Amino acid sequence: MSNLTLVIGSKPFSSWSLRPWLALKQAALPFEEVVIALRQPDTALRIRALSPSGKVPLLRHGSLQVWDSLAICEYVAELACAYPLWPEDSAARAVARAVSAEMHAGFSALRQHLPMAVGTSIADFVPPAAAAADIARIESLWQECRQRFGAGGDFMFGRWSLADAMYAPVIFRLQSYRIALQPASRAYVDAMLALPAMRQWAAESHAAGGQNPA
Image (tube, rainbow, N blue to C red; front, side, top):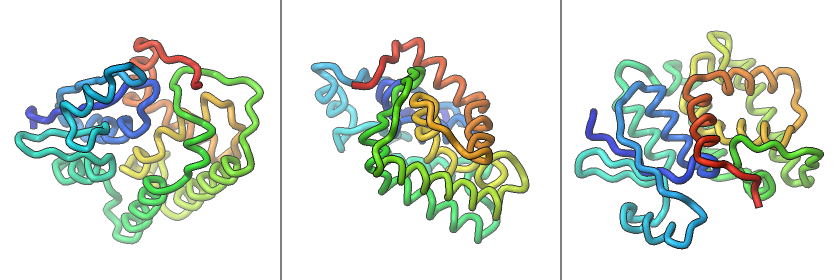
């Protein structure tokens, strides 16, 4: 699998890039990483030269190109024979896919008002009502998944899964904006932040010069 290449945006800011990057790390699949600096005059041109959609992330596997975060994660799950990336129970797997699709398509107020900027700390931030509603919905999803399926570990479905990858950028957002959480949510956030791959992304974001969001 050494001919895997993942094209991503700057780590402090590229929430969509984080998801498949985590999937590859958790699957222990070796891959080449190509980082394109975001928020630069030539960013769009550089991405367009590599990605047919003009967006990141993009996974290349030989001649194959996959250019959507969730699609990349699904493809990685098919490659990851040694580490199942979806829950093995069919009911849990169905719910995991549903919560992943909800994140993929929704929570626009959270994205708008709490942009990801890993390593920053914003004091006295009060989320607008729509963003607060998104956060409440996310907490309820986490708690329901943990209660129904999480007995086997610290993550949404017990052992780590792609559902956790889909919510990983939320973890960094909640950390940056110092959002108060319910105890069960805080325990889940702490487990995610302790994950070696999350720690690596955070460290490399810091090294890349993360800054406060505009």
